[in-house]
Every structure is written in C-alpha cells, then in structure tokens.
Image (cartoon, rainbow, N blue to C red; front, side, top):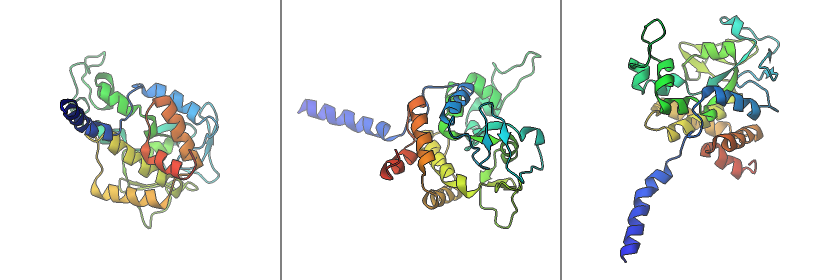
Length: 248
C-alpha cells in the first residue's frame, strides 16, 4: 500500500510537468538555427509571405509586380523572420528591458534590448533560436512587418504590389497562404513558453479562426517533421493534425 501511495503521489506531481509541452532545449544559437533551416528548406526554397523562390545563397527571385515602399536594399535576400516577434517575449527578460552589468560595448556605453538578452540570458537564446518560430521572408517584408501584431486590415491595399502582405497602422495582415502556419506557431510558442508569452484574447480568437480555416498541408507537415528531428521537440499543434490527415 505504501509503495502504491508513493507511486500515486509521484505521478500526481509529475503529470502537470508532463502535460506542459517543452520548447527548444538543444540549440541556443540563432546563427546555428539559420544554418539548420537551410537544410530544412533545401528542397522548398520559397519565402513565407510572398511565395518568392530563392537559391542556396539566399538570393531571391522577386515575383513580377513586387514592390516595396521602404528597405529596397533588403529586398533581394531572405531573412529569417520571427513570426512571433522576439520583442513579444523578449520584453519579459530584465536584460532586454533594463540592460545588465555585462552589457557594455568597447566604448564603455551600456546597451539593452535584444543584444543584451542574447548575451546574458540562456533562456532567451533558446527562445530566439527556436526553429518552429522562424520562416524565410523577403528582407524588406521582414523589416516592414517589424514587431506588429497580425490582424485583418479590411479595405487596405497590398503593401508590396504582387505580394498580398498588408501593413498599416502598426498591424500586419498576412496572405492566406501563411495564416494557418502562423496560428499553429503562435499556439506552440504560447504552449511551450507560457510564463514568457501568452496571447491576448483578441489575438487568440484570430489564431483559432485561422487554424480552422487554413488546415495543415504536406509542406507544413514535412517542415515540422524535419525541425523535430533537428531540434528534438515536437510542435503538437502541427504534428497531431498531420498524423490525422496521413501527412506525417
């Protein structure tokens, strides 16, 4: 009876921990993540928002009719976009908000923000490097999206001509091709890093709608499977529907 009670208590204590999904625990290098993602996308070099093809060196073939009102010099190379902006979880780290004694440049000037959090805090580095949250984007689109929340921008014209991405009033409306993947990425980040990130009610409702309207496809499942093999943890919000659809 004593052994049974001990086993029961241990199970009760462990269940909450087991129920929580684990995020990235294996790679704390953003640079290494970008290199590994080049392997993930080796046979699917297509940018996330605009569907533009790029080569092994990251040079983009811009779609006919693409234009950008800003950051023209960043339009011909891919950049790895944090779909959930790093600032959304970075602000929870004191090093990002306030700096730290270690964050002083070679001229003696103190700094804070992403560079300080990356330098000082290993937990932040793991979140920043999580490959499930990183997608290839045209550099100019990445720059203009900034850290803006996603929303539906009714009546707005596409910001980039032939690419259906819209940015206005410090909000971003992604093309339909990206919405389901965005939703399942947000669910994963909130589930894996709950103490550091949670969605607003409005954002959660939008993501729930997009998740239902835009189900997984073969590429999203392949991408998640490859990242799981490299990073060592799963995105259950992708894996479970992929299994159900026979795409895993």
